[in-house]
Amino acid sequence: MKLKLFILSLCLAGCVQYTSPDRSTWDYYLNGATFMDMTEVTKVAKRPVYLGKGGKLLTNTTVNSDSKKMEYGDKVANDNTVGVAYMAQLEDELYDSLRTAGVSVERAGTDVVVILTRGAIMKNDVAEISRNGSDVLSTVARILRKYESTYLEIAGYTDAMRDANAAHVMSLDMAERVGVFLSQKEIKPVRMFIVGRGSARPIAAQDSIGRLTNRRVEIRIAPVR
Image: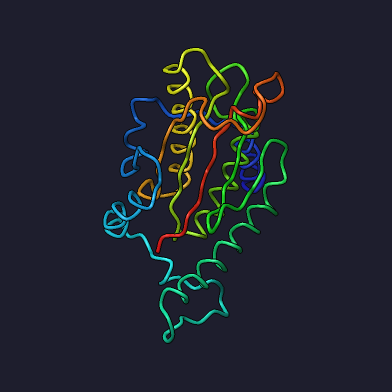
């Protein structure tokens, strides 16, 4: 009987629709996050805070169980070698795990970018993460917990809107919701840069189909050196 109840509880838990916590609590979940673009300057500025919260540098992280820490040779070259291998493994895991419509994984130099269209992660009628979005973001969180020596820039985007201020508010809301979700999944906010970019940087035409692609959240993942 106890086993049946346990199995039933697991099934019910899997059927529960995720709901974002009350907005008044978002500051708690995002405590330590930086609300500006992730640049080389802001990454350097964030590093002492990141380390103070228990963050790990990539140089102190092995790429896999067979890797050995490099002790000789040019440090920059060694760091680049480790960084490329580390991010390549991260990219492979994300790509293999996120074979879902509206979700893509791309490489941008050393960084890896996960592009999540709004329709893939949020409900159509309200500003809330959907059931499918919860599954997708849970997968992202699981992998990010494993690759902990990384910063995350979570950027929200809208399609072309006449009201630039409304576009900014909407895009920031999407980015913050994703940040809160990841925080609830044990991703440290100190790793996060959160921004709303409105209708800037469209990646598709502003027609009826392209607009659905331009409404998105991008998670740019960068190694912490």
